[in-house]
Image (cartoon, rainbow, N blue to C red; front, side, top):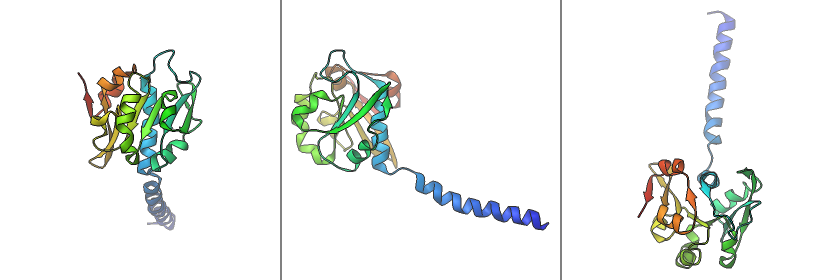
Length: 178
């Protein structure tokens, strides 16, 4: 082997040794992945015309600060469906002005109130805790086999006056229907 070939082989191995750990570090943390999935799901939802939500923006709201809420804040201003995404911290009384409301594990005690308060309101109630789908959340993210998956309660979605694309329904792990 010539010195030139040896040098190229050494450089290639060195680049691989440096690139692989850097690639592993670039994988997004769980809260950022969940926030991205929640935001991207808005692309597959249609809201009723004339709802309480502002038509010139898409608003994702949350009640309490947490890792996913912080990750959602990083998406504030991103364009979705040609409209700016606005991420806002609210109290329950303001929830009807949101397109989507994220409910964290810390907000579990609010779920019964939220589910009845937001019924037929045009607000997509989202969460990321086991059992939330059975407690009124319409779109719930969970970890399954090391991956983030989502479930949809289509009954609650329809009751809220929302429509979810069949493309999103096909990707869901579970879809609750009539």
